[in-house]
Image (tube, rainbow, N blue to C red; front, side, top):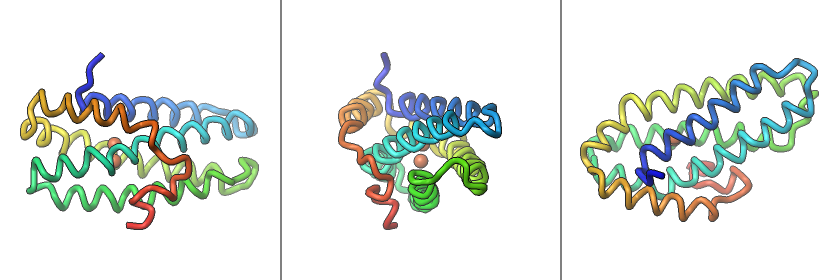
Length: 159
Ligand SMILES: [Fe+2]
Ligand SMILES: [Fe+2]
């Protein structure tokens, strides 16, 4: 299995996209299923944001200083997402705003992922090269277990 940092991040993006699609397909009244999917989304995105904020973003910013603005905007986008995750965490799926929150979260994350993958990752890849990306990816794998359970403990929550 590849430890390339960008491959790993893209795999996470795919995992989350699958969960979004599952949620979209779930029936209006499938409250237990929607709660379960939301919990998986929260968990996946919290770990993903953690390794990006702690490891990938700082390393990428150092490797491609011209993308500093992009990194700063990305952290602000995480900030919004992380607060939405924290609201969903304790929410009853029967509440009428539950689906609306997941829908807006989905839109935000899709936009964010598109910007990361289309504009930014290719620049980072060419600046870093294979070996560095593999080392970075290994550090990211090792750090996954240190991620907080509560999204509000992420750095971006306070950004
Ligand atoms: Fe991100
Ligand atoms: Fe990402």
